[in-house]
Length: 251
Ligand code: UDP
Ligand code: MN
Image (cartoon, rainbow, N blue to C red):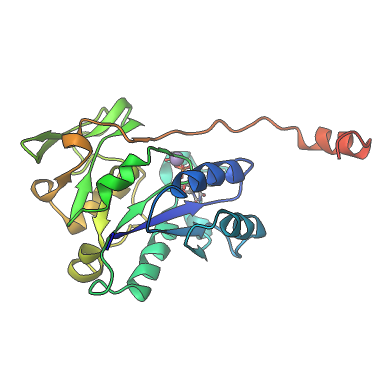
């Protein structure tokens, strides 16, 4: 039987949310035996996300947890002081640990942010991972791509242009972890909400593996199957637009 892919996606309310989730859903729709765990950064599950999940017909679990105030990226705090999506990924992990049994289900967990661009071939690569699999990611690490450098089927180093001293200088979308590793071997591993951005991945991976143990994927890490894309926030004059609607132009 085909191993299951659990994709954990943190998401939050903003103009682009529906566009990003639509794009991601239409990618995931192509993937066999995938279970999408969508975790909203909100106090309540929103109707927008509920409707979207129902519409696409992907097997899903809908969760929510609001990032605590002191951990949120505030107006007066610089963006680089807090990591994003941390509590949400932990809630997704907890759901898997509470509901899935490693002796009944074979599979992997992947942390799929709502705004990246995924080649569906990436999911074929990750499905058969035994421990922790890795591959390159484009447009991250202040470089065209960042990720493992592999020789003879082993990771021997990393290519990155930002803080290369990190033990695992890779993006969140650069790895997937087997259920066995997360449920049986490292049942305590989680994301540290207090960690500085850019260190979340390395601090998580340090809890579960070593460079020598990593399984290179995507043709010995020679192919890019995921892009760390970021969408430009649209410029919208909400008050002006409300005036237009009042005048009865668009319906
Ligand atoms: N995210 C979230 N709450 C926030 C900010 C981000 O849940 O306050 C989610 C977001 O939807 C995405 C992930 O966390 O799935 C990573 O955030 P983002 O893409 O903004 O980070 P970047 O790619 O810029 O590092
Ligand atoms: Mn992003």
